[in-house]
Image 1 (tube, rainbow, N blue to C red):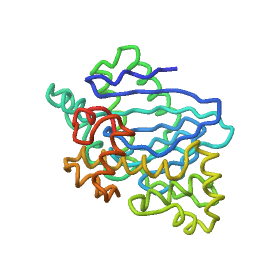
Image 2: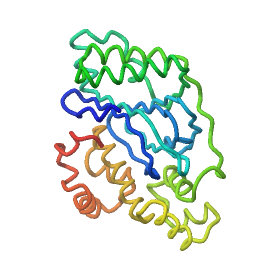
Image 3: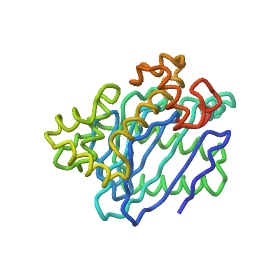
Image 4: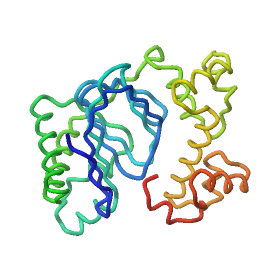
Length: 271
C-alpha cells in the first residue's frame, strides 16, 4: 500500500489507502488540483454543492478551490487513490520542458470530470502509483502518470446526480450549505429540508461530530482563504465569504486559522 508522498517543493501528494472502519468526510477545498480514484467503497461525491454518483473504479478530476467530499457506503471498506498536484509542480515541469502538453487537462478543468477505468487501466494506474513511490516522486514517473491521466480523462463523461433518498441528513445539510453558505442560517436549512431545527442539529452533530454553526463558520473561512488565494484583499475576501462585520472576520479568522488573513505566509499551505 503506497503511503503519502511528502508535500514539499514539488507540490505533489500521492496517497493510496484503505479504510476498514466507518469513514466520514466533510467538504473541504484546497489550492491543488485533485484526482480521486475510487477503487471500492465510495458511492458519491459532493462537488460545488451537487452530489454525483460514484462507482467502483471511477476516476474523478476536481478543479482547485472547489469544495468537495466523498460519500462512503456504510460499513464498506473504502479504498482510494488521491493525487494532489500544485501549480508549482506544473510550472517547474514546463520550465524543464519535460511536460509538453500533458498537464493541460488540469489547467483547463473548470467542472468535475469522471471516467470509469477498465481492468487494464486500473492495473496500469496502480503500477504507476507504485513506481512513483519507489522512485521517490521522480519527474520521469510523474510525466508518465500525468500522460496516463490525460489520455484516460479524454474519455470522461458527465457524472450522474444522486437523489436525496441516497443521502444522509448531514449530507443533505452539506448540499444546502454549499449552495448558499454566505447567507443561509440554521433555521433556513431546516426549513429547506422540511425538518425540525432541533432535530436536524442533533442528527448533524451525531453524524459529523461538529455543530452546523461550527461547520458554517469553517466553510466561510475556507471560502475567504480561497478569495485571498485568488488575489482579493482582506475586506473583499471577508465580504464575499459572508462576513459582513470586518472586525469579526479578522477576529474569527485568527481564532480558527492561527494567523491574520493579511498574513500571506499562511496561504503558502494548502487551503
